[in-house]
Length: 72
Image 1 (tube, rainbow, N blue to C red):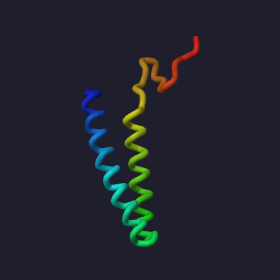
Image 2 (cartoon, rainbow, N blue to C red; image 1 turned 90 degrees about the horizontal axis):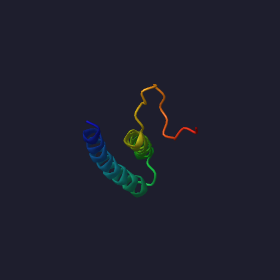
Image 3 (cartoon, rainbow, N blue to C red; image 1 turned 120 degrees about the horizontal axis):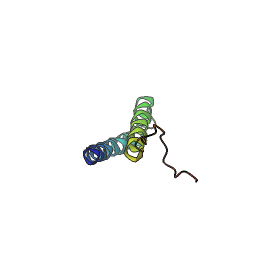
Image 4 (tube, helix red, strand yellow; image 1 turned 180 degrees about the horizontal axis):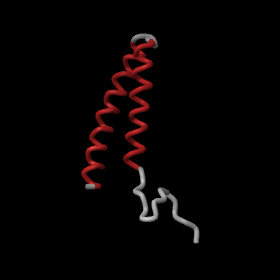
């Protein structure tokens, strides 16, 4: 289950990166058209969200979510 989620998220990230590159090129080619700038920001936010999901940690049995080792 965990591996499937990471594979699907990885494929989605590759697709979103491709869209981000295309929209970035359109921003440059159109001279910073506000429509394409908004789309670039939205796609960038989606990319950040997906990459956060990809690197996120699971909940521990105690219900505490942390990516850091506890100091003993």
